[in-house]
Length: 233
Image 1 (spheres, rainbow, N blue to C red):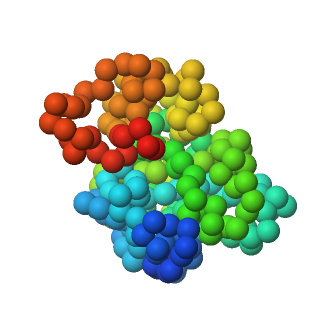
Image 2: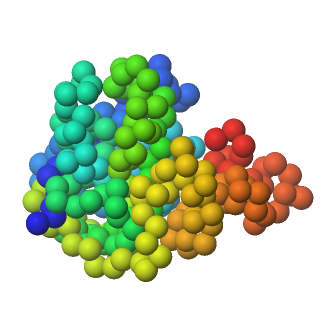
Image 3: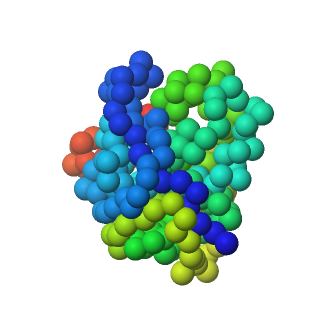
């Protein structure tokens, strides 16, 4: 049975590893129901802090899920205690293949309906929090990045809630494929450009890297291009 092993939230703490000098990556399990909602910015999880609003949070990154099966595989490979929330995930799942989740796949979890959006790309805040040498490379090579989720229907979730897949798009492009395309296997990028359920900035990044036209009015000047679509990504 697929279910929630843990629901985790983080509070802003100081860090030298983020350009905004604070981070909410240190998620901790909480008891009782937690409301998931559609954020304009920041986290979609009640009580959860997202500090770097330029790069994290918002509707396409409202909730972050990571499989316990994938998380626990690091227990003998990193110095940090492997526990729910240590990778900054809001939902630690059991019994569901998060890497194999299809983009646009919908999960009914407790009172909420969630949609698989895009994989997590590791950053220096993540590496700095864990204190692991070469962490970004190691995490990328492992290629089990967890999934960001949109909140389609707000509602409450709690530990033990089942995770039911209620919709799976036929295109078959999953979290693992998107992650590999954006990191180590650029030959996969053409698979991303027509996936409507991917964030538009991800599709535009795939177009740009494959030499396809990007549907952005560059005549309006650089401010017309969102930060996460610029070449310094």
